[in-house]
Length: 184
Image (cartoon, rainbow, N blue to C red):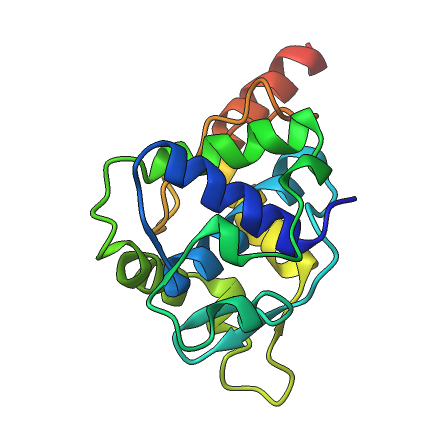
């Protein structure tokens, strides 16, 4: 399994290849969303590193040293990361998440992602507690519900996980209809 620093390096390489610059702020939030959607798609984490609910949103503390004091972070600066540590399925999932933000202004992406994460339960439920760890269980619960019901109030965009997921998501309305068909 890849480490968060490996995923960070991959994210930065992919964004740089598309002529994007990535703020330290945006990198941390992109790691959070990649972790969340991997939990939903594959029912397993992308990386084992803890995610904490800091004042300005989710932070992977093990990646923070590469971000501290920097406005922008570049792949070459993440010397402890190995993008090749990600499997093809992990890369496909990360690419899906990155594609959601392709058209966003690089300078505003971190702020936009902060607002999104603050409006969502995994961060807001633990931010003002003594244990500010955002658990994989809370991310899986929230984002699975969101994937199953895109009409649910949310801030972050929902990636198309159909070809990278081990799961199938249907709405409650469709589940009720299916149940009625099967019970006849």
